Length: 201
Image (cartoon, rainbow, N blue to C red; front, top):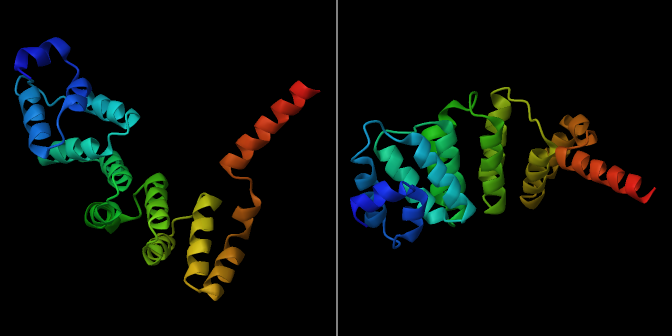
């Protein structure tokens, strides 16, 4: 597409969805798009990524984020979280793990639990159970307090599948208070149940 088309549309996500599946096509489109911008248009890029997420264009999201990072832009935890999530959805869990190790895991004290939880879930879904246990152990070693029993459940299953039954027992003992607390999803179910009861009554 020519540049005037970009200026008329000014809709990056529309352009990105239409491209053939090649890194060169994506990179040259993005390069052409920013050539006329005085400041790097980070906000528009973020909107484009959200639009691509809605369309489940994970491969394209990976390309866009990698391009953005290659320009030295958007170098934040949130960007890497989006990249790692998109990589796993694109069946590239090993690459997601490498990026986590290289860019994020060296400072576990400051990584939001949401991102740590995403990695635990990726390891769980992709049968990387040794890595799941290792990451959880590293978070505990940093003094990070686990906020959710969903994470503990994954660790519990990993111990069980690896035959580490003593470790599983210790884990359940250590986190029994968390297990007895209703989780967010339990609370939502409870609210829905109460609403339904009210309607029925």
